[in-house]
Length: 189
Length: 189
DNA sequence: TTGAGCATGTAACACGTTACATGATTTC
DNA sequence: GAAATCATGTAACGTGTTACATGCTCAA
Image (cartoon, rainbow over all chains, first blue to last red):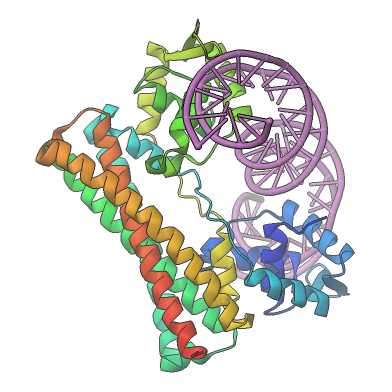
């Protein structure tokens, strides 16, 4: 059977370091890993079992003092080969449902005051996310400088994705502010 | 039971006009409706049945000549009430998995030439989408001018969402071009 | 004559989320 | 004393996709 996108996502993290299922979930929840989505343990553990059955990863149990034992997964040469093929394979663009944009599309039938309140909440949340991404970006830039382009190591991947995060959040925030201005024209306090 | 996001998405379209299940799917696939996602008929038809059981919509069968009969759904006053509450209710921001960004995050282990080819494919596709959104945006602006802000009709919703579409695609294209420049530095032809 | 569009639905399967089960250590 | 963190897993459920079933009309 074919490997799912979640399966490949796990392989990309194991290409950087050997990790347990728990640690994989933790990595995916880090702010600068926004593009991984937030997979649950209940999805990651069975997926790791499948990857092991397909010989793309191997596992070994590590005894820990004070903490539960953990199962550390390591990428196999076959896993690396499959991953490298996938990384440069064609990717379909998929339009995903956005609850907030569906609501924005129906703003014409909303109460302006109540809508404004929700737009301000979104603005605060997105400003916080942007600040986070910008901090990550400057940290990478200060550490690697103009050599980033030539890097054949993980920070190159971090750099390009955090840049997308910053661009996306800036665009989203500009849009939120533009809609807030429109709604205020309609309902001045 | 609670109404799903797809259920509310359907209600937002029925607030604009009475439609059949087939027509709802068609609406959701239009380029400027990118934020609806592409729901299948097999999901829309049962969802409409549930909405009718919950008394949020009513249906009537319309005989057509030369085409199959269709079932036209209409929003009820209760449906409109539920919808108006939902539109101004809090929305959780959800980070969605992006296959292309996961690949970008693993660019450090990819062949630069092959990666560049995929980035150029994405660039062409996103340029085409941007052109589409920009055409839609200018069409709305030319038709309604500076009165858009005061509109309490559907075009206001179209206007704000198409603006997001344009902003998003411009940000995405800028990012693609920046990464292409980086990859070309790494692998000059 | 082949395919696209119109039109509604069911069944099987894949993917994702929530809840349940267990249990020690550390921090507030 | 309560909550968070570490750690792995199963079961049930909800959502989304693919395949199947049917059949007429119109355009290339």
